[in-house]
Length: 159
Image 1: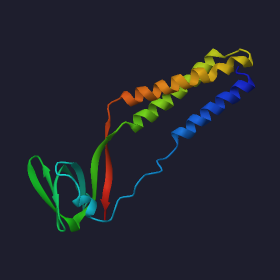
Image 2: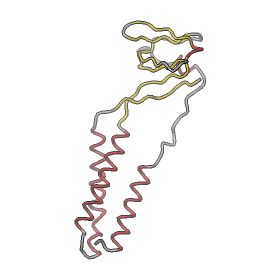
Image 3: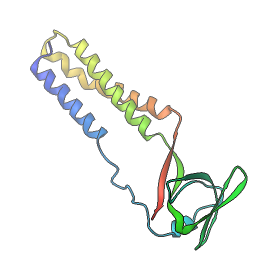
Image 4: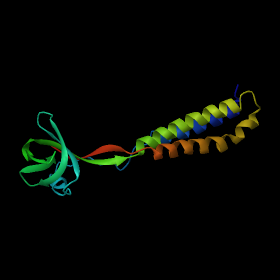
């Protein structure tokens, strides 16, 4: 059984970790209702366009003007009327989710290791808990960061 003082310390460490895991991105942007971000895309950029009816088209951006969005799909140009385009998203890559999963798994493993190490010990056993908790949790986040990135979509236009 874990002594009361050690249990409080582990609860505190777990609470700090959960607080970090549930933090949201303060700088998250809302998609624009203006067509100008679409017109400013670089030719060749990977995009996803959803048209009325829910059909999704993925391809390389070619051009956009006041009336049409043109993208290349399998080396063929597809012109979509602007009036029928519901939203446009740009492809990117991110490791953020992998880092958060690594952090959570590292925290869980370190709490389990501390529980096993201090099982039946006196309260002084838990004084070394941070020395075990933080490196294992950090190692989990580092392993997550080493995972291959995943494709993410950032919406730049929504009707």
